Length: 121
View 1 (cartoon, rainbow, N blue to C red):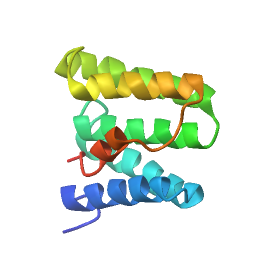
View 2: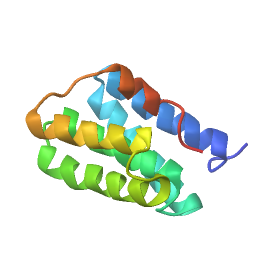
View 3: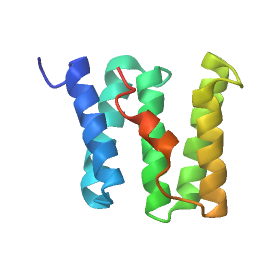
């Protein structure tokens, strides 16, 4: 398939997501960084797959206690989704919820976090 094929990019994203959920932060970071790089290069920064990768980086930064870095990433995701999907779309609302959770310190896995699995294309 190749290193930049959609299935390869999705597998990289999913590995980062899984490692994050397993609290294997250092391993997750490698996959998340690669996911963003590949999605951005192949699809552009406005593509939904890239936006999901950015959201995953925001989740990672939150898990690392780096909320000041996570907040602008979540805001970028919210802005892109509002523009592309509308303000009331479930993915937009989910990003808003995650930003608020990061700001209030209510981090952790919830049912909606599982929705981010297998989203990028």
